[in-house]
Amino acid sequence: MNDSSWGPPQTGYWGPSDHGPGQGAAPAGPAYDAHYAQQTRPMPIVPDMPEHGGDQDADRGAARLSGPLFRDEMPQARPHPREVQQNPEPMPDAPQPAPAPQKKSAGRDLGAAIGVGVGLGAVIVASLFVVKAVFVGVITVAVVVGLWELTTRLEERKGIKAPLVPLALGGAAMVVAGYARGAEGAWVTMALTTLAVLVWRMTAPPEGYLKDVTAGVFAAFYVPFLATFVAMMLTADDGPWRVLTFLLLTVVSDTGAYAVGWRFGKHKLAPRISPGKTREGLLGAIAFAMVAGALCMQFLIDDGSWWQGLLLGLAVAASATLGDLGESMIKRDLGIKDMGTLLPGHGGIMDRLDSLLPTAPVVWLLLVLFVGSG
Image 1 (cartoon, rainbow, N blue to C red):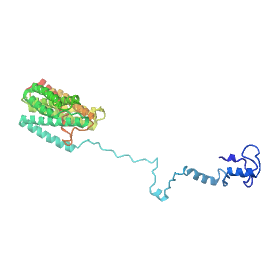
Image 2 (image 1 turned 90 degrees about the horizontal axis):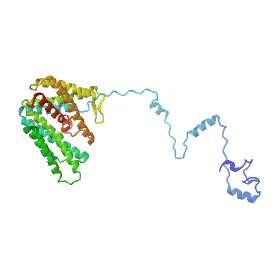
Image 3 (image 1 turned 135 degrees about the vertical axis):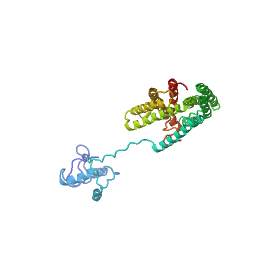
Image 4 (image 1 turned 120 degrees about the vertical axis):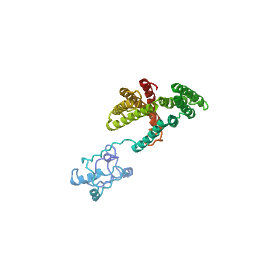
C-alpha cells in the first residue's frame, strides 16, 4: 500500500477520521471510525531528512548507496591503512617487466641420444666388417623388435591384434632369404608370411579378422620386407661399404635436417603430420646428404663417381624425409609420441628405422644402376 492511499494529510493527531477511504464524504460516527481503525494501521512517522544536495545528504547518501542491496550481502571489510602501505596494489599503467627470453631447446636428451647412437654404430660397424652373417643377425633382431613394437602399439591404441608369431618368424626368414637368395627369396618369403598371417588369425573369433590381417600384411611389408634390401646390399663384393654408405647417408640426412631446422627453421614442412619439421630442415638434409653422397661414391664404392653420389644423396634425403613423415603419420593416428622406450634419447627401434626402411630399396636400386649388383 503506497502513501497516496492514505488520503490527504491531516493536521494534528491521527485519530478518527471524518472521511472514508472512497471518493466523497464517508458516513461519520463512532461505529464507522472503530470499524475503519481495525482495517488500517497508522503510517510510521518518518524523521525529517535534509534536503537533497545538503552536506549531510552527501555523506549519508554515499553510505546508503555503497551498502549491500540485499539482506544476505555482506559488506567487504576495508583493509587497514598499514596493510595498504605494506602491500600496495600495482598501478594499472605501470610498466611490467619483460619475460626472460627462453633458450631454444633441442627437444630431447642429446647426451643419451649421442651415447646410444655411438654404441649402436660401433656394434653395426664391428659386425659389418668382421663377419657378414653377424650383421644379418643384427638386422634380424632389429626387425623382430620393430615388429613387436608396432603390433603392441596397434593393439594398445586401436585394438588391432596383428598376429606377432607368424610375423616374427616370417620376418626373420625374410631377411635370411633376401641375403641368401636375393630379391626372389625375399618375395617368396613375403608371400608365405602373408599366408601364415591369414591362417594364424583364423584360430581367433571372426570379429575384427579383416583389420587384423590387413595390419599384419602391412607390418610384414613395412618392416622385414624393406629391411631385406639391406641384406641384399651386403651380398656384393663391396657389400659392407655399400651398407655403410647407406647408413651414413641416412644418418647425415637426418642430422642435417635436425641441425639446420633447429637453428634456422621457420617455415613448417608438414604441420598437420609433423609440426617440428621445416622446409629449412629439408634443405639442410639435401645439402648434407648430397655432399656425403659425393664423398662416399668417390672413395668408398668401387667404380663410383662423385656426380652419382650427388644424385644418390638427393634421393636419400627425399626417401628419408618421406619415411620419417610416414611413421609420424602412423604415430599421430595412434596418438603416441614414440613407438617405444628401448633406446634412451631415441625412443624405440621403430623410431630409428623410420627413415632407414624406405631408404634401403632406393639405395639398393641406385647402386645397382650405377655400379652393378657386384
